[in-house]
Image (cartoon, rainbow, N blue to C red):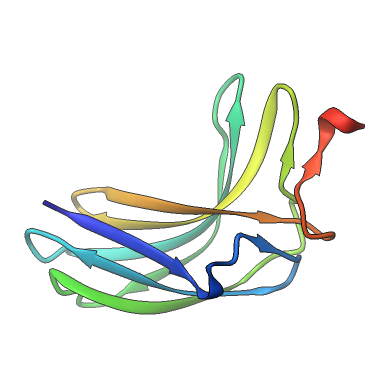
Length: 122
């Protein structure tokens, strides 16, 4: 059974714009993958179609069936994480093994004051 894990340093779940996000990706797969990627992305959740924006990707060369590797991303200034009545924008680090497309995500907030913007309070 395939298992994928993402660990973010200090288990942080809130980041400031332009922060550095550091972590480790681990996997235990039945067969060696052709490629393993860690993607920094934002996505929307709520009513309507989900939008996704991939900001950066780290590709691990010559992956074994089971191992762990470090990664780091420089976070952008925007867009901020927000939550509203109809839609929310979230950030995540996604680990994906190819060609199987097995994946997992670790979600976090990107906001200037340490918490997501709440549109329902505006």
